[in-house]
Image (tube, rainbow, N blue to C red; front, side):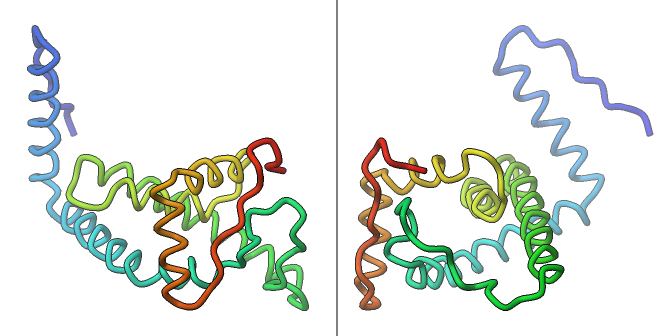
Amino acid sequence: MSAVPIPVAATVTDTLAAWFGTLTDWLGAHPWLFWSLVGLSVATFVASLVILPILVVRMRADHFMPDRGPGDSWVGRHPVQAQLAVVLKNVLGVILVIAGIAMLVLPGQGVLTILIGISLMNFPGKRRLELAIVRIPAVHRGIDWMRARYGQPPLELPDDGDER
């Protein structure tokens, strides 16, 4: 398979247009990939409309508080089962982040898919990132509105300096 040469362009606009043309030509040559990504895009959008409210409502009000106790979702589970679930959750998160990045230039909910993927993965600094997102006033209002609609108390957030 030979590489498609990208012409030298004089401006950024010409460069982007050439890159986009090359990308559309490549996707035209691989329609199965294009339609797979479109299908994944539609599936993640519909799944986010269904799953996001469920997760937000089921989340404990003190989920972001540093002194909260551990969750009980894995209590009594076999350690191998718990580790396998963590590995699968992280693999799914990585797949969604990669798909979300592809959806930034293809049809789909790229940013939303990336955020869902990041929320599934375990990595250093994840809690700070989640808190930064939840502290955005519009996001916090939306979460609390959704929780109130289903009779749940609003989320409790730690003070800015207390993020452990």
